[in-house]
Length: 156
Image: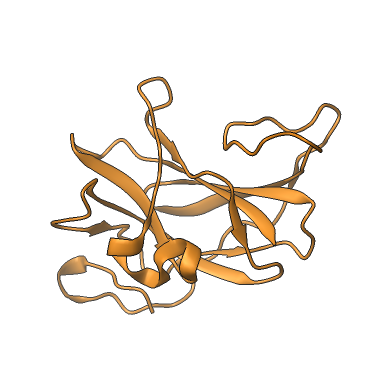
């Protein structure tokens, strides 16, 4: 399995709201906002939100978007407003942690793969092992999707 961390920069949340990542596959809730993966932030790291390391299938394309909703998962869901979805191609090997860093409503993403340090616990804020290089890979891309009424986007 490939290990992936999602990071999003978002200042638009209101008290009681959170940022979530939702998309293809069980780990991202199969496009169901009620099953979306909650991201974490703190007073020290806001407006950066992140997930723990997730295990994802090797060599697969993952489509996803960030959403804002109540931390209780009830009420209105706000989807990112650009057409299409974000896309991440997981590496074909399981020796790297891939970090997908994005800004809310900006389609451009930075995808970085770093070798995993042996015997180091998984944390989203862990730096690469000493001497390890971070190798940028291709940026995330959009896939076509029709926009739903009133500007709300639904997955393909």
